[in-house]
Amino acid sequence: MTAGTGALEGAARVVAPKRTRGRHRGWRRWINGVNLAALVIAVIVAAPLYWMITSSFKGPKEIGGAPSLWPHHLSGANYQSAFSHYHFETYLLNSVIVSVCATVIVLGFGMFAGYGLARLPMRGKFTIMVTLLMISLFPAIAIVSPLYLIMRDLGWLNSYQALIIPYAAFNLPFAIWILRNFFLGIPREMEEVARVDGASPTRTVVSIIVPQVLPGLFTAGVFTFTACWTEFLMALTFNNSDQYRTIAVGIAEFGGEFTVPYGTIFAAATVAVLPIAILVLVFRRAVISGLTSGAVKG
Image 1 (cartoon, one colour):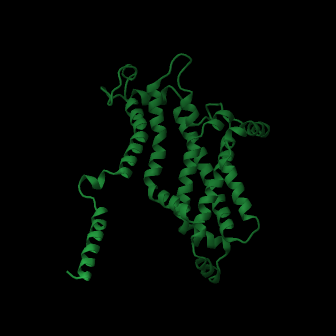
Image 2 (tube, rainbow, N blue to C red; image 1 turned 180 degrees about the vertical axis):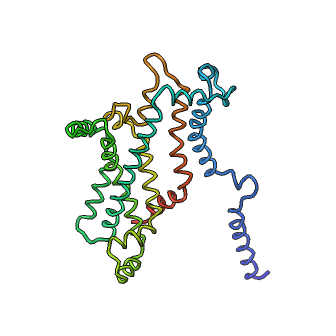
Image 3 (cartoon, rainbow, N blue to C red; image 1 turned 30 degrees about the horizontal axis):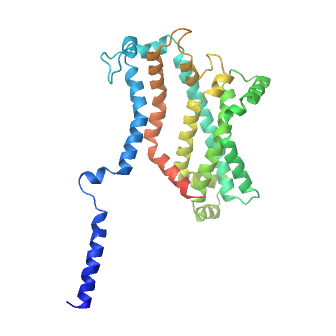
């Protein structure tokens, strides 16, 4: 055996394990640390939702009895009770109005603010971005009392604008961050071509830039709508009338002093979750694209 042949055989023995080490067949392909961790997280998230949905079809005795994974007798009485004994349809409509209006305001202002911070030459961009980040992280409970006094002086208590304006203000910084990162990823040549063709800056943004940042708009819109839909503290503080009460506060008010209608609460909560679930399912790809783009750009 020559020295060259021995060297080749030794190299083959060293390289061979590296080729087969990354190949997993059978159960090893699916059972690994990442998949197991994802499965555990999915079970933790899905278990309360499953319990809520199945309990909404149970009667009071079955809910208070021994736990069961499936209702013994399916019943829609809890859903009927939510809409007949309470003003649940009013709470639902109020939440839709407040969440949609706040989301539209956030996307409108966030789009132009994000474009300005990404494209226009200005001083203090870093300071502005840090300020926006601080506002987005500021706890709402710290300014509820001052906001209440402002709403009282303006006569806005028990009104839609009492929630729409604060919701838009609190969610706007997040939208600006997301959309700015998208604008930074768009080539400037597209805007230059539009200007050469005679398009105004506003027309350029609306007709050329906006179609390119739709994933970012969907991402900011879904997160803003979800935050407004589930917000509780401001809705409880500013609106205490059934006419303007939102769904989060309305469900919390179910029941009386000595009774808690768990089945009705579960049914109302299931209905409240449906819009968020539909939004996530419909725009899931756009949301994932927006989050990943925001993570790598800027």
